[in-house]
Length: 378
Ligand code: FE2
Image (cartoon, rainbow, N blue to C red; front, side):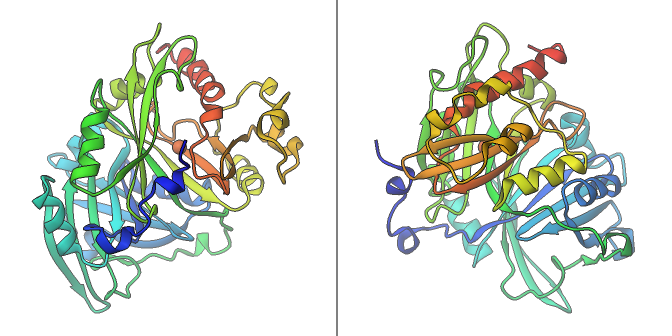
């Protein structure tokens, strides 16, 4: 079997019609952006960065922007009932609207993707203020989710034109939690829709399918799902796509689809260089994580071989370990971060491994099903 790296095109940059510099930001439509910003600042260790709202001539919404290392989250709430944002929240609850990707040329990104069948969400828009110019364009993806292309090479302001710097004194003394960048973003799509969206990422965005998991890989006694991992040419952007598969009971993807009222972002994986420290911090600050049975650790080293970390803190915190041909990874999954059982976060530390923790799927999904059962949705 080829490793993930071998399956990435070697000279991707030269023939990539959509060269991506990485994830730019993730925008969440939420019921109360002011309070959500405090959750990401106090619980996840983000810093306040920028704000837009009525005070900046934006009459129909407010957006708070928070950051941590390369991570940028935008939290947006509508101010009026009759708005597309209000309709989005009414239908989906709090969730991800925008997965924004950084590009050198946003007009060309829009041209290349719409030429290949992408549905336009935003024609190239040239935004200016005293800090320079940014260009934004975008296309739609699964459900009501969109990709925006962000060109900010000529912009030096806090976030984007229209936003003002937000630096409240309450946050000055708060430390970060070592979260660095978006490792991958996973989408849940409907029954038999996975291959449609795999083809979308291949045809419209030039991505490659680098890994596939079928229901034999991802099943428990009760439920199953299938997943394919899509990656752009340089590997900076990875989007696994899940669809439900038949099982004895309702799969976690079906529960998501029921409560999100359709397809959408299931989880965002955030990278750290010290998962033990990061997870300890996050737990102390109130982030809730899934717990696998402690028997998971009984033969851990037999399964994954020698690792640099002590197993005691991994067991205490519930951190999972998996190995592939290239190294190993440590990961842990939060509980849903809003009232509906929809979006959650993964915390991941890669030590060579470029895969996604296949060896942990069973234990992880059993832990998820336990929670699903508590909600009466299994
Ligand atoms: Fe993941």
